[in-house]
Image (cartoon, rainbow, N blue to C red; front, side, top):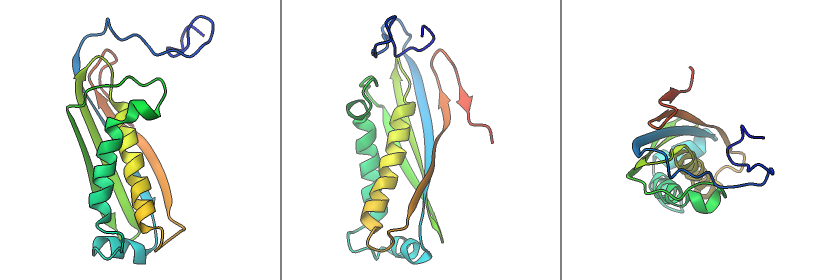
Length: 157
């Protein structure tokens, strides 16, 4: 079990000690998508959802979630985020989300970017579920990460 960083010698869960790691600028981009009916997509695009501006609320929810990642993922380090952005692309069948998290720190921000994307998508579902209960959240994934000891990484196309 020595190759698993979140387990101690006895196999018990632990938070990794990052105190000896160098502080570097780190960034991660995560993405995902929610598929829905064309009627629901059109209502979101035209601002006709009764609960309000779906994408504005989802953007704020994603940013807030990134800031609370350590409260949600048990062994994540609480980190000071320098920036979080959540962007959307609408089409006739749903919404794609891309979330970026950045910090200057001793550990990466992959979980923060993934959490931001996931919660933004969940918020879209919550706000539009009266229009389409068959919506599907899919393909939440890490796209890129930069910085840190392991260097840069990009999802293969």
